[in-house]
Image 1 (spheres, rainbow over the protein chains, first blue to last red):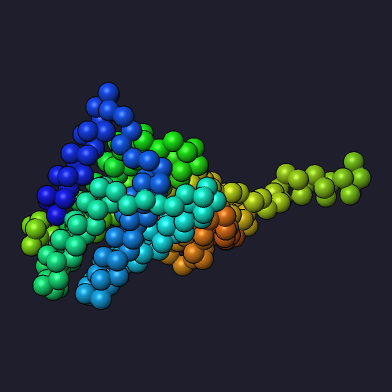
Image 2: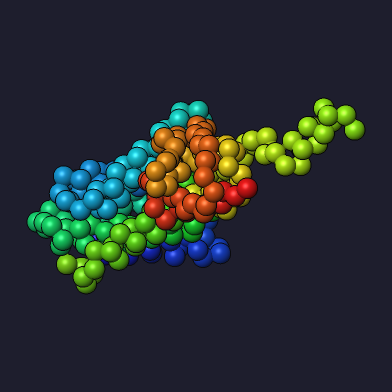
Length: 176
Length: 100
């Protein structure tokens, strides 16, 4: 996962350079958005089969509910604009990271699982927030797609705070 | 002053004001306004402008889950300070001050 986060971070840094041309087309931005939501829904569904902690279960349910709502809007907007989401390096990097995260969570149970899941969610939402700010919003041309990203940002920020709050209640060291 | 005017004056000065309806908008993952003062008998309406669903929930009462564009209401019954939150997003908080 760290390698993947580094890849996304490198992409973000490239996007920050003043001279850099926008990296992603709008169909690619749409693909990143849909992928980012789908990844979090999938992991939350897995977490719900594994956790026995009410606060963690509730957090996972909120991730499913919210990211599904966002994806429904993204799909509706893409259809309205006639945009077909296009796969790209950022989407692939997120998917590789998701697969790695799932692999590292798979053997864990109980409190160790809860902590590792919340640690992953904190890191993931931070990466997505950075991607929204530094890559996706700046590179998006279509005003409605840009507005969707702007509208979604506070939800991602709230998820990050929610994850940190639940994680702090779990106690224990990060990582395991 | 005839008796009817006296009754009306007493009603205007001493009687309860007619109940009002207050609106709290939920947008950008916040309650607007975050703090609201109402009188007993007033109605508070929460309307969700966000893409994601929300609730306004306190001990003993709460709205249903409100999807985008939906609203829910409660009638403030008793004086007091009420802290409420969104059930789906526990970091979202609001206050309702109910007083005469």
